[in-house]
Image 1 (cartoon, protein in one colour):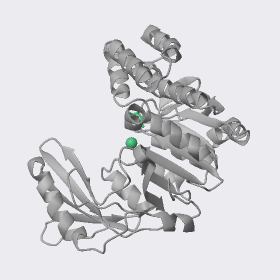
Image 2 (image 1 turned 30 degrees about the vertical axis):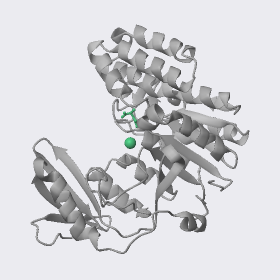
Image 3 (image 1 turned 60 degrees about the vertical axis):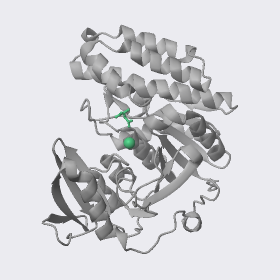
Length: 368
Ligand code: ASP
Ligand code: MG
């Protein structure tokens, strides 16, 4: 167990909510045995895209409703939990908002809100006392619709109520991705639930922020494309920042500076495995990140200043060197594998679990 007796923020991504919801709920209930737990949830995978379409075309409501109906059935949550907000969503009208952007962000807020309702309900069914918070009452932003920045000072004040609930032994559930400005809901940019988790980690002075998804942690390259990709036990905040900016999807890059100083633990919801800790230490392994733009792809090797035998553009940010090449998308897979062999292939064999090191960090992950 994560047997720290501290305060944890645990964020579940949209794929976890959709596919591994039961395991996410039991994981939280086990963590809660020994910790104060603040849960952050994403919308069910696909729902944000559907809401986006709904806001601009008025189409696709039935699909959103169906996804939640199927979800309720699959995980034994009464569909009644979703009925009120779904009705509200259907009735929203563009005319009631000062701008299209304000309307759109309001529509988008329902994805995370529905997930939050589901998570709170599932925990209650486990006999756990839960408090679900409306994120627009807690997270205050700069009002930049679609990509708002959080006002940490104001938000930290608002977080007092969450803190009190945690101290009373409640699991708190806070839907991700959403905040507000002058009473209007604002979203934090795509993948913004990580940002919410980071803000909570900071504002609640958590011992760690767990980012739970469908992969074990951070790899030296995308494991779906590079078979020999290795899980990286320790990654530094700066490596993570540079890799995220270059296109790595593990965490919203705006979240990293917010949470600096607090360990970020990356893990997989299914089987509760934990693969990477981000902090001040580093395993000093290169990270190959790629970004596809149509026919062209860009590969960035983070932690490397040159790639022997390749013509690269190179640079360094925050003390982390990087080297970059362009390839045609059709050759992305083979190039990634070749580079991986070259840059990572011959390095020492690393253990695939971190249990001993976790204890030294004050967070034991044994038998998680
Ligand atoms: N649901 C939002 C998105 O799909 C935010 C998130 O999942 O982090 O971008
Ligand atoms: Mg993500």
